[in-house]
Image 1 (cartoon, rainbow, N blue to C red):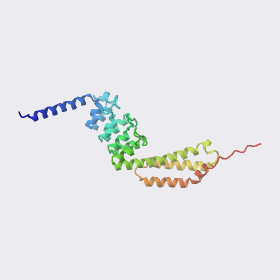
Image 2 (cartoon, rainbow, N blue to C red):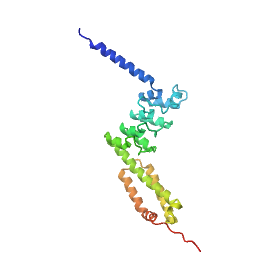
Image 3 (cartoon, one colour):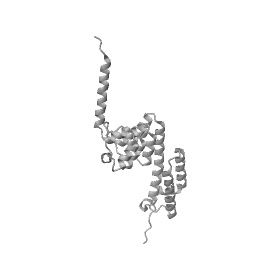
Length: 242
């Protein structure tokens, strides 16, 4: 007897559909809303106390899906940038990591979400955080061939290094126990002023190139060369009066 495969196929399709529906029903409300990708609905649910979903979503901001991704991370993976921003604004973490060490930044790099990367970096996430496999977000972007994301994260590291150098220079000259008499008052004032000016520039420098940032560092190092030289000299010994 010939077997009619079509009804079986339909049965499998219906069973598969029921399975997906059952899985969806088990997911938290916020996860389901993120999957739908309706940023206006989520924004109203988060901000409007009269919304029927308000209590549920605001008390479960960091709820996870069946794969362990938090709602904000799921929004990143699906490319829902505005939902990610709305969840962060209401208190969802952008710094937490999964059991394997994946952060929101790693998710954005893996899924090639450049807009999400920019937002996360501008909100001071740790760009050097690594997974349990010792991969930074930049490493993951490179592994998947997401060149724009890799370039942006490399740019972020160059900018971070400049800001770190400026903060360390400023803080060093402001602490007497660290300069030990090696700098004049003018040296200290000049260094603090220059470092703060360049820090303000770096913090606002979201549209400059890597080479511009590197050139800015060279300029600062040349300008403060005499201060750096003095800081590398032995401390000035105090002369005790007899």
